[in-house]
Image (cartoon, rainbow, N blue to C red; front, side, top):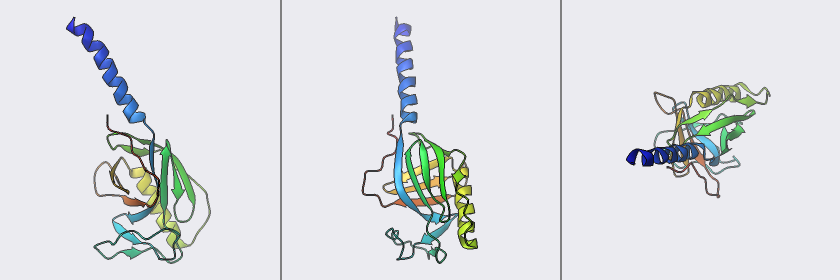
Length: 165
């Protein structure tokens, strides 16, 4: 009799875990405030507010290079590299696992500083395996090692990550 009750309970638990992992995620729009271990200070003339004060000296974004951006809506992520627009499929589980699929980008040529930022940003996306969310900040990490990038959302709407089961 106990065995008969355990089977439906186990099936129910597996189903709710699968649903939690598949819930749509939402974050952003957000700007990169740290990339490859280097803080990025946004110029005051940028269309988004500057990030909060950073304790260590911030490396200013190259003159004329817009910040890289990210927005996650459900199973899609998109944004700007500071040069080109990009988009990718994304899977964000309730346990913090975050994976970006192959990234599609527009193919504009930009100044060397913008192209360097783009290469670093896209490599960080492809290396991401997990994310840590703290309020309106999102940090992306590889399987092992230091943070790849930190983003800050300035959105007035409620950003949501998948709920824990």
